Image 1 (tube, rainbow, N blue to C red):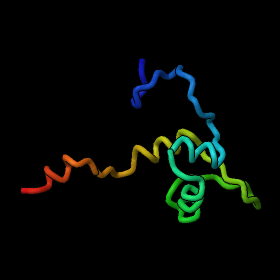
Image 2 (image 1 turned 60 degrees about the horizontal axis):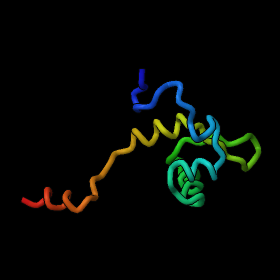
Image 3 (image 1 turned 45 degrees about the horizontal axis):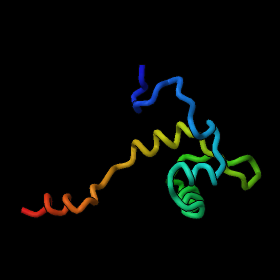
Length: 84
């Protein structure tokens, strides 16, 4: 039975459960420095090692975070729909 995100629960993920900054940026399709800035600003769930600079991300938290983000339709047809 597929999970709510449409994937089979037994399907292996391309990404591990715990991600480095580089892997999380790759998964989210953003630049590493942009992801670090989002962490500094507290805009994305991240876990920092005590007393260290290392940051780790939980894959499932990132997926849930992405799903919670409000979307904006930027397609050309969206502009046509907005006009009366």
